[in-house]
Length: 201
Image 1 (cartoon, rainbow, N blue to C red):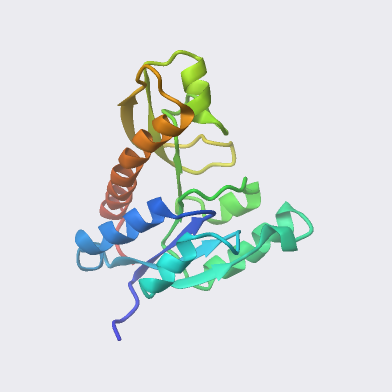
Image 2 (cartoon, rainbow, N blue to C red):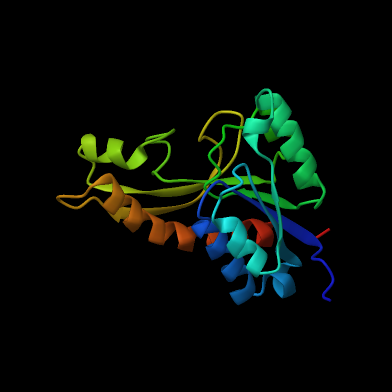
């Protein structure tokens, strides 16, 4: 059995986990273990029915569910989530379609180690319904952003962005599908940049 990576990565999801899968596959293809001593070790979700959990288990990754509905408030949920994450002593925590707003205490706990993907060209269209809003505003371009997480929603240092055209007749769904193909490219690229720019322990 291979030794655990010196720089473990934990990914948080809430649904299908397509960005999580792209990250896991990129980590193997680009040999993050050999190059950076890093590797994805666990996938956690706030939803027991998140489809990405089954895929992660098939890859031999540890999985866990911390159901937000089972906790009295946001602070209690975040405390339970932190305990589950910290069991893996992560060098990085990657939010990949994780649909929960995190408390400042959680963000501070992982300061410098917490990355997120957002389906717009930040600082435009923070929050939800980004594709619908871009179309309604008449934007000619949309895209996705990888950024460091701060206590202010969808802010923080921008690490990577991808731009896609908004086409005549686009719906939020068709635009989202076009953006998603780029998300799968830029998230692994951003993680590689972070790993390359920070020394191994």
